[in-house]
Image (cartoon, rainbow, N blue to C red; front, top):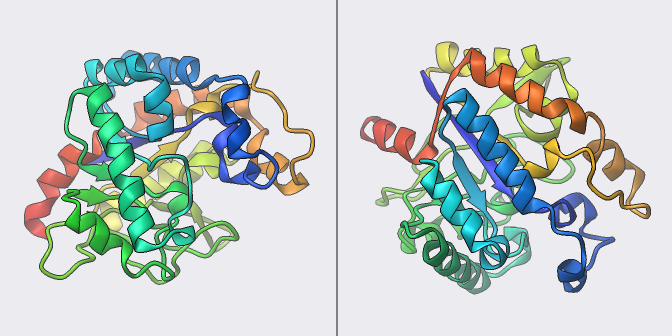
Amino acid sequence: MRNAMSVDVEDWFQVGAFETVIDRRDWDGLEHRVEANTDAVLDLFAAAGVTATFFTLGWVADRFPALMQRIVAGGHELASHGWDHKRVFTMTADQFRDDLARARTVLEDAGGQAVTGYRAPSFSIDARTPWAHGVLADAGYAYSSSVAPLTHDHYGWAGAPRGLYRPVAGSTLIEWPITLAKVLGRDVSAGGGFFRLLPNKVVEDAVVRSNRMEAHPAMFYFHPWEIDPGQPRVANAPLKSKLRHYPRLGAMAGKLERLMARHDWGRADAIVAERAVAL
């Protein structure tokens, strides 16, 4: 079964873990590493023969339009990650609608292709945002991958479906939650920091379980900054954030290469189109 390989394109200083210690107004004055890191990701995918979906901040696309063109030229999907990583549950429905429109305009202008996929920053569509999927449906998105069906201190919607589903009655919009792994009986994300920190087998088993036992494709994700051990350190970040953000950055590229070799991967939009008829 083909699974979705996805990348959340944001720079090292834009992550939720640092939002209380790095002000958005300071972003332009910080060292930008997202272009070089994303190019490195593109090289990894090219070597593995993998196409993927790049959920990209409008803020990044606005500053690095040529990078958007390289993503598209590589055969990948360019999708939206919102404008500047504001969590959906911090916005009103109207603010969310404006955020979507602003990001989409810049992404489509830079990439030269329609943007039909969306991922909420920090998987922030949850029980607090009952209007969010409706806004996405009204905006004409084909799919979202914005729900984490678990409990976590930063995100999560425990009890949400674990496979692809239609969240809005009468709409063709599909929600594709991230795939979960099991660690000591606890559900964790099968991507991002957990993938970086845990043995590959934990995530590989999660992909197999999703494909064979649950009969749906897995949704894997990571960030370009996760393959960058040379990124600046945020000295005043909370200890928990440092423990999540910095370990095993140097191991990530090799871990990704092994994961890509073990399973079949592709773009989210293509897989959604294939699966939509059965939903």
